[in-house]
Image (tube, helix red, strand yellow):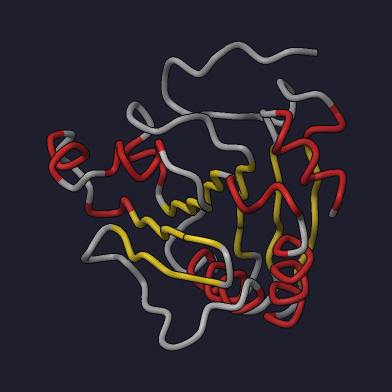
Amino acid sequence: MTFAPHTGQIVESGADAPAEATRHFIWRSEADTEAFARQLAAQPLLTNAFLTLHGDLGAGKTTLVRHLLRALGVQGRIKSPTYAVVEPHEAPNLSIWHFDFYRFDDPREWEDAGFRDIFANPGLKVAEWPEKAAALTPPADLAIHIEAIDDTERKVTLLAPTPAGRAMLQGL
């Protein structure tokens, strides 16, 4: 099955995606989140991927990003880009940009901040609250939906609408 190019808001559903492009997990603890992040970091195609993270406040999006960045070799403090919108990180042989579009509300900011250039260059891009900038971003390679079941347990759905995303999904 082929996917049409993305022209609108990024909205995926398990019913629309082929079975091989969707995977479900239950993370019972933060240790499960960390283990998943290590597996994801080991995927070769991650080095030039666009990951989107979906979920309510407190679902664990930033926690996943912190574990992923550590697994990729990022040293030093890893802070949330909630107020800055984007935080750049460097790992061995890899540039990473962590976006948090929660407070993003002006499309002019996209150009002013140079986000078009960031997305045009190689590297890993990870976005929290991607729906706030969906008309401006490319399609996600891997969309990670996190739902808090309780204080520790998370229901996670991975959707992979691109060939690179499907390849990463198969490697998990």
